[in-house]
Length: 117
Image (cartoon, rainbow, N blue to C red):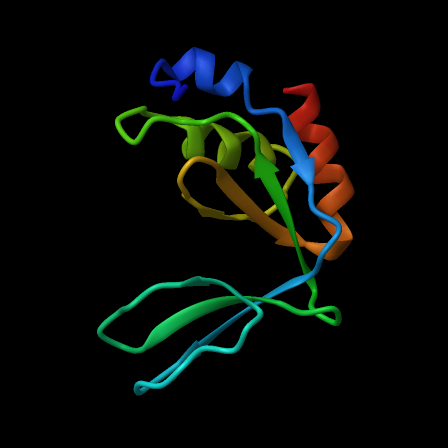
């Protein structure tokens, strides 16, 4: 069941630190994507990709709450919580879960910070 209430979404995030490593890149033109693509977004400038790569420097934290598309404030609350610890992040909304990408060296702190929120 999806959660729409802001307080309920934030209370139910249940962050999970993914053991994989990730990288961001962009491609132009058509063609097929490599098999390790996690996210591809068609944009006028090209196609930004998020790839699963063992040697990459980003980690992903999956938010277990199934946030409703019409829910307001979850990405902002997560980004604000992490910013208080000077942790930059990239939030990627998904269905049914949102994903937070942080640098590898700050991943444990980011995960712990979200657990304690």
